[in-house]
Image (cartoon, rainbow, N blue to C red; front, side, top):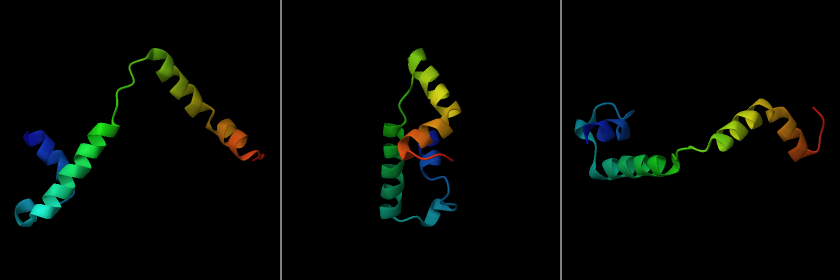
Length: 68
């Protein structure tokens, strides 16, 4: 529990003066970050992500239809 609170409140500095609303906002933001962080366990999916990252210029050219 302490690890989650520490991570959620990272960046707030001194939390002794934090209001209830600020605490709620920090915890809701942390919860949203956790929900968006999904594991990629499929090897094919990971390989495709790596390939797309290596060919990012080509992907951007295809989307824009322009030459860089």
